[in-house]
Image 1 (cartoon, rainbow, N blue to C red):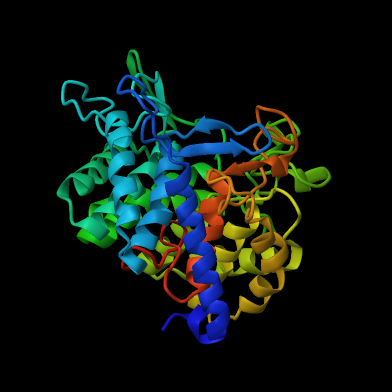
Image 2 (image 1 turned 30 degrees about the horizontal axis):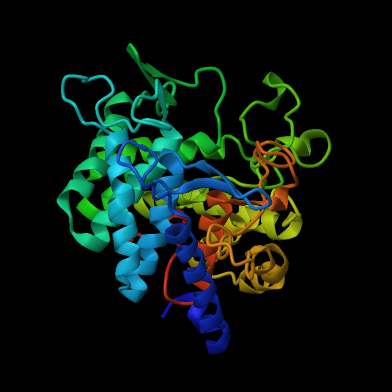
Length: 401
């Protein structure tokens, strides 16, 4: 019995599972299905959907990873073949992003960003696709998905540098590995999450050192009040504009992360593997800061990951953050789920886009958009609260940990 099951009533658990499965259905229903074989978007999930004009932006590597976070959970819980069939189609696109050609030794294992011929691949974005491969391996047993997730993690391992940490991106024409050299980027450390996932599958400890180093880099971004800045040395960067990660508030608060992309998973994994209390203590301070200062109305995606964070921390510290989560669930999660439009590319998803500042590339307002980012975070949270799941992609307790 999970902590969420013990503290949430049975009727509410059923509601949360139903809402989470509606989010999974959104991925299936909005998946691009083209008529002709030369239409290369066939099988892709969406980056986001613009409801007023029924326009879409196809997804890329990380959005497909996050779709698999949700769909593998839905398939594991229900056994519904629709979810597996949808993933089987999407995985064709994901395989094309990771050619695994041994001729290209520098970039071998990296997952390209948007399309198979993309000139670069971001490592944080590719990491979420790699975790998606590993999750799909967990529910199907298919060795190819393990091979692909492992190839990405082996790239992380062989290119990790104690001075600069994990690589930040790769160029393909010609091949070149890039690093963030002058300042520690906090959310970039979430690139280490698939190392934790692979470790929990294989038990092989060689993948832990880069992950623990990433956790130390997260701690270097923590403020004295417990919040996390998006960058270690804020004096070296200009005032950040508002977006889907930071920029909210006034003064130094603009540097605070609101959506941290799951870095808490990395730090708690470091605690679980080393037993060093500094990692848990730091995240306990972060959880306390979160419940004292969050959530805000925007960024719209933030509450889902914040709630997952505090529930994980509370499970390790024994502190119950469930009342805070339930207090804000209706306004910041349930109310944002689209329903009743009759549009299969909208219903079930969670609305609210902040990446461009106030909306997306088609104009309109933020709540006109249904993004994968929000839908994944909120579905993972609802699966947890239902007592049937752990929000695998953004929980240290996922993947059998």
